[in-house]
Amino acid sequence: MPGADHEGWLVVGSTGRRQNTPAALLAGGRSEYEDGILVLPRDRSTGEVGDVVQALALDATWFVVANRDRTRLFSANEPVDGGECLLTSLSFDAGELRVVNEAPTGGRLACHVALSPTEEHAIVSHFASADLSVHPIGPDGTVHPPSQLLSLSGTGPHVRQEAAHAHQVATFPGGTYLAGVNLGNDEVATYTVTSAGTLRPQQVPATTVGAGVGPRNLVFASDGYAYLANELSNTLTVLRYDGSAGTVEVVDQHSTFVDDDLTQDSACGGIGLSPDERFLYVSNRGRDTIAAFAVAGGSVTPVHEVPVGGENSHDISLADWFVYAANTRSNTVTVLPIDPATGHLGAVQQTITLPTPMSVLAL
Picture 1 (cartoon, rainbow, N blue to C red):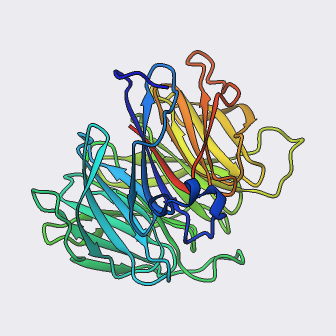
Picture 2: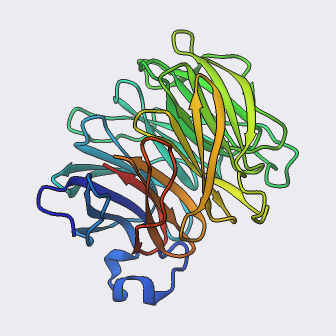
């Protein structure tokens, strides 16, 4: 168990009722574990995770993001009936969550939340309705109904690209621009947030990253390069970005399959950089692995690929030289240590049973 001076926290978004998690895994049938956010203490030096200290009952929680000083969290929540989603604002103090308020997003299947560079707006990505909702945030953390609901368009050659699918928005380093990922038409678009709370396209046209690759999650490094995990093709796209102009361009593309002996039936999940940005990690759902790469100045060198210790690693979070993986189908979060010298992942050092963990955030 983490000691009193553990300092870290693990915040897990659960979609138990939405995903029909077996009742036996819903923490003995306690309703507060079925959907919502779970908070667990995390030891920053050992990576060890303790027992749940708070289970906050909310609608199915697909994603949770923290502000820079980690005093506020924002979550994307979907009702059990699949109706209009909610953006929830929460205060966070010493591991204790308190709901500030909720606001309707106007979209369906809210899969991601991002904060604008000034943290004055939250942007919610909706996979099913293919739109981005922009929500003003008050000084007290209150979130408001959308000041804009921006509809996306486009299709792709893959069977799952019958329409646009907003999947993520990420902030450029330097705090001026945003990048939006559209899984449905293979594009990354860039935006600014206006004073009126609307997204204004910055790079026109948007950047196409490949035909049928299905871009999912993007992570920026501080050296002018970004890395994009493509769900449908199990590939990793290297992007060069200009933080002063708000533009991105494709540099290279690599497979996320490092071990050729494993099954090829897979889809990319989460992506993250090591604390020193020398190593990159991508989860492969289906193969149920995490692939490790050495990265520098846009170059990518495979390191190895290891079992994640669970099924369908939908999301990963990196902190203090540990990878935390949310494995939705096995109802587990697994912890893997990273060797800071080589980037190699060690064997799974801990498995925590939780109901349908959809997102994981290590603080």
